[in-house]
Amino acid sequence: MPDFIPLVKRTPYLLLEPKAELRHEMHQDWFWQFVGWIIAYFSFRGGRSFLRDAQKSSIPRK
Image (cartoon, rainbow, N blue to C red; front, side, top):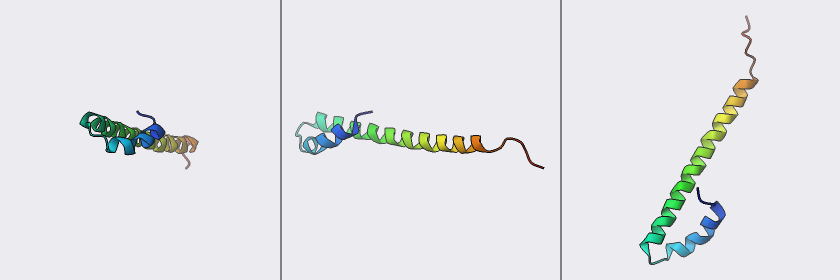
């Protein structure tokens, strides 16, 4: 996954780049950055749910 800040800083320059290979590489970097954020989001949500379930009492009440 590419670093976010350097990706943001170079994006305006690469959008104006006449070489299609560099623009394509930038689009791939943004795609993988987006995939990484989605994975981080669902990992955070899953971990938070796991901790909430772990804090619940496992002894059934009658």
